[in-house]
Length: 335
Image 1 (spheres, rainbow, N blue to C red):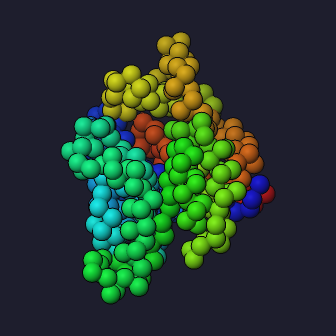
Image 2 (tube, one colour):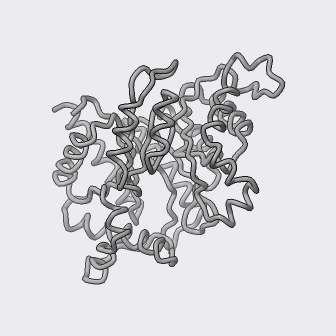
Image 3 (cartoon, rainbow, N blue to C red):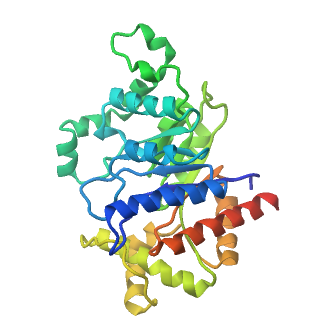
């Protein structure tokens, strides 16, 4: 296992039952402050559309909101779903953010749309072509950030020469080839897409080509983490996440539900093949239980950084889980 594992948060801003959008976003900021105080490396927002259960729609706006109210934690996108956006506008937005918050802004880029096809069509009519052109779209963004583009006919002047690290996001093996070819860091969404984690990491490391920004592979893996005082308490909190994904896969999405005792019905939900595979890399339990699981995961994957998704009902439960994970990683790094 590598030393000094970094740890970060992926914020989906899941809306809990009885909690407004405004309060959800306020909680996201408070969570970012907790993460900063506990030495998390970065705080990334996801991008989702056409849903009343997720508040992270306007990713770049939320990045500015958090960056303006924190001091040093890196803030970014996990990710910007590029088929939804013009590369020029993305460069201008993130160039602006980096001008306002120097050396703190990350740009994670994904190939998916983060929504259904009808909504993707409403966002951008040529989204299918944009998805197929993902490598070229990334090259355009790199071009707009390049100081050499000062003589270009089309410019994002506010972004030129500005330090905004790019990360390629993936949930299959396709983006692994791309991240390796471009010599960019690679973040795999194993918190919901577990099937291809090891093959994607293997492809990326084997094919990696050093670049101006990175001389050796850098990998991030997403995991779900729920930590409580006891295994039993954590398993109860886990029921909210099980019900969330079961609702997504059965077309009956609801706001994040209050936790309940694990019963036969919930065990059956968890054993649903798609739900079980989706939640494969979920570490749920007491501090000792989760520490053991994370150590095995790190040894198995050899990733450089954990990107933690923590969908827990009850904000105080979520804060506790985030704080305890920081203790775990500190212990692992010092061992």
